[in-house]
Image (cartoon, rainbow, N blue to C red):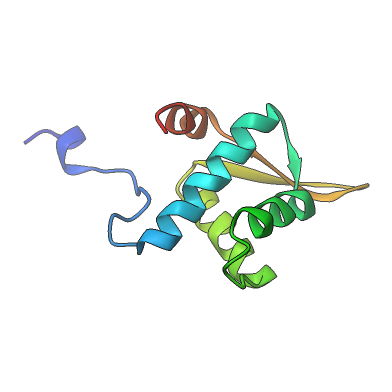
Length: 99
């Protein structure tokens, strides 16, 4: 096997539960619909509205955002006015279009 076959970039784990999978898909859809950076507070509020039946904490939502950032799907940047803003990477845009 070649080096490319042996090296695999980390991806979103297939072992995550269905709620986590749906949450991560909702993050990608929201950022894709925003068509640009979205403030973390607005993204968290959107996710709380979509998942009104689940009591996600801010730390839980931020953890999922950081997980997606760690695998190169989204990236967070700190803005002096609105704080952290999130956006899709090229890889994330491709993934979001597949949903």
